[in-house]
Length: 196
Ligand code: GTP
Ligand code: MG
Image (cartoon, rainbow, N blue to C red; front, side):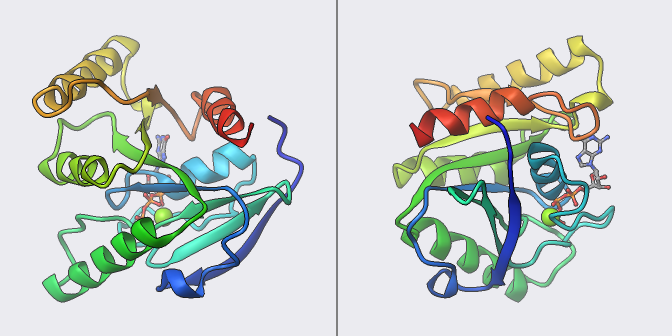
């Protein structure tokens, strides 16, 4: 798919105030600092459409971007950020679950996992939560440039094994890098399939 236009629309803390629910929508989620905003920029080929930061907790709102005047891409706040208070962690969780459960045009969620770290309970819990609500998702391993090919494969296999404890069938998975552009064609192709 060719990206002809990418436009930031608006930021919200509440799904009710998001743009009209009238275009197919794809959300990006994962732990803070996993590389959600960087991946979005890599996909659309714009350096700083979504704001990124070396410090966790940069994205705190539901951010809508309109792509090719046809579909929405959504940058969500990170979950499982240890450095915020319990109260704000709960507030973030409510923003995220409220959005995921109520957004009618949400087509697919991309769950981002840092390929360098071993399976984290918070990620597995979130994935199981999506499953229990029947929400479709794809796993995207980020920062693929930081490990050797072999280590990447090992890490992906390890995650698959962790999932097999609760899942009969594994979800689609892809390895990406915001630095090298790895995974771009696969991810855009996947979105295109959904767009039909
Ligand atoms: P929050 O908005 O805080 O939840 O974080 P985020 O998930 O949006 O992460 P963000 O895109 O801001 O990236 C976090 C840090 O990881 C930044 O320093 C990025 O430059 C770095 N980063 C993201 N993706 C990659 C990647 O594919 N490769 C490498 N080497 N660094 C990356
Ligand atoms: Mg972000």
